[in-house]
Length: 260
Image (tube, rainbow, N blue to C red; front, side, top):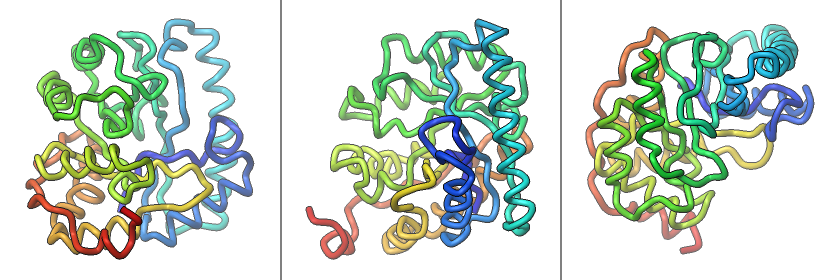
């Protein structure tokens, strides 16, 4: 599996607080079957409008990246490690020319909306990125507090040129029942293009359990496309393959694993 949404760099965001937690994060993802990682610290898009501040923050990320890279080389040689960022769209037109702002230097950028809430004209921000020559992947739409109950907005983002990444923990209820239902709806409608962990180097990781639950819903092919095929395609700036919709209906496993 290739996981391209996680927070493993030490002491740069709300992920790993130090190199010891980075080690825990790498070990945890390895234990869950992940062998390729693009780590994505938070970065505010508005920094790209302020070159000096951006350069200063990227220098901090560079130092943390070297520490993480050294750790992975010494202790996790079986893991391929790349870098990117999770870019907060706090402005409608970020500048993505620096390859460090994109996933493994590809044409794809992982983006999120600020304060876990979708702003007005979010589709315009997606379109602006596409018109700049890059491809946005919208992170965890199921987690935004003001998402409509339907998938209409997700469909609008996709029509504007974005792709969609769902958190594996959302499918297990890590972020509550509303996020869980929305995440499953995206898979059932074929609107999810990628599945990643959003692991913050502490707490429970959902990757392995999520794989089991998808398999229990006859979703083996979907799981492979979401976690292996499509993430590998973005490394060479190729668009994801379509993911067949899951059959609707929650698996009986929910009644045994989750309290609702």
